[in-house]
Length: 412
Image (cartoon, rainbow, N blue to C red; front, side, top):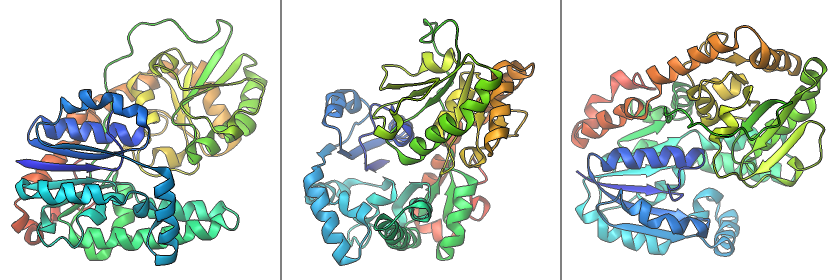
């Protein structure tokens, strides 16, 4: 088929959560179909990777640089108009005109993130049943969670974004042939919010690169027991979780393991993370996170605000490392706490789990179980097989079959 893939972030390099999923979907589609790609670029340095990205695209390709100044002006207008700030940020007349031309030869369209939905809502020249929207997670509910802990005026802005974005998500799910979420939990959450889309909501899980990290020198000191958290470190749930671990959990760990040292590894660390804290190192961007995972005593995912599937958890499991995570960071995964990894939500329980993961007698056994889990369930070709099945159903039949066997995703 000719497939149009529309993405709110350039899906290369695959160096953070949303770009990892988008890249693997693109790679999967490109191996089976002729792909036409359009994506926004918010970091101009990523344009250096255009040629590498082009190797996956046999059809047309458009990369649209984002102007933050223009985007903020559009967001101000959206406040007045009552539309989501998210979608106004990604509005583009240039992209609309490109779609007008390319869509004439397209059999199916795959949209990555709800922010891309407006480009295919209310089009008179393309059957909406031919559109697959990958929401990944329920963004509107994320904004609702943010509003619960924010202060005015952000509390009002976040609550407004939750309402307006949910309206858009529901409209898109009702119009398009299929809507994808990253886990059964996310799919069930959205199915309850959008009952009018019953039968067209599916779970398509994230996968993980199963290649073990190559041999490398340890980035840690010889006298340390290194604990690592990886991620994009200006993303608020990561920031909040890292601070919670550094201030409420790590001191409890260090009472038992004085040599424990917490490494926060990832690009764009927020200023609040860079405050000096005993036993904590903030690396900023590193060339390769794999040595930090491979040589860690334990990988931690202390997220209290989380949606979807956390790649940092999958990456730790794939590298056969002991992983400790919150319930929020693991509820999108088909895991068994105590068998595949440790799960805890309170500071003392989390600290005790970290001590067990870093030095306890069960750490190697549980790490091996975690690796076996991702080999069985989270290989990208396995997880994206569900997308193949969705695309294989003729759009004319999608409403009739109602995807009855796969509501909230039988296939991971």
